[in-house]
Amino acid sequence: MPDHFTLEPIQPDDPAPFLIQDPEEVQHLLMRLARHPELVCLYPAERREPFALSALLQVAQDHLVFDASPDERTLALLLGAPYMVCVSSLDHVHIQFDAPAPRAITHQGRRAVRTDRPSALLHLQRRDYFRLSVPVHQQVYCRIPQHDDPAFIEAEVADISLGGVSLLGPLPSLLLLPGMRLASCRIELPEVGVIQVDLLVCATRAVTARHDPRSLRIGCRFIQLNGSSQTLVQRYINRIERSRIARE
Image 1 (cartoon, rainbow, N blue to C red):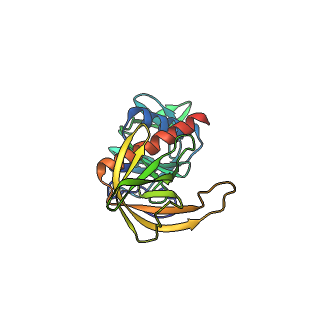
Image 2 (cartoon, helix red, strand yellow; image 1 turned 90 degrees about the horizontal axis):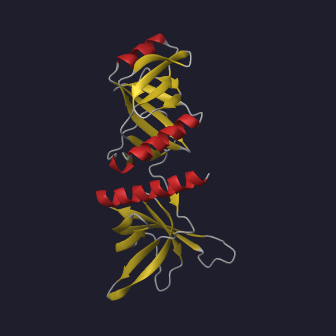
Image 3 (cartoon, rainbow, N blue to C red; image 1 turned 60 degrees about the horizontal axis):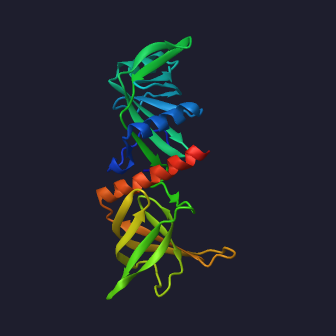
């Protein structure tokens, strides 16, 4: 995936962690896309060209309405396809979905395209992973086992993504350096579940924060996070983001 944002369709190697299928979440994101004046790029199925720059005009329970392309050839190709690939963004997050059965209609006195409502959509950060800062009112902790000791070290998580976590340090009795592997760590995601994963320490960074003893940020990458754990992390990220948006 490129580092810059693009209105081109993208296909992750494993789309499952980024796939939103819950009907309420799909509806919520579509409604936000319609409320904001965001561009939506429309592509005929299985094609990258031609495409049309459009806007999502209406979200109903069973259909969507898009602004029609003024280019007759492009519009004909979109209407002749079994579905349109729709690409846009919200808060710098890539939104992509297939809109089935496009057909021409008139909407509020102008030409438009109506499609069936998608059952799922992709929700991806413009970089490889969307990194979420953990809310201060609902802290998340990573429990790190110690060799030959039944006790564990508990580290507060500063942020989390599908790629890894950033821990707050320094940690008592444990000096973490880049390249170290932390096996069988447990991270409890509030109201979602617990994941167990190996972590690779990638970087440490000193920070200056007045009256805050946690002066170190320890960036760790997940090592082979399995599918069920990916689902839990994505579910946690979606839940926190949805809660934040509701408070705006």
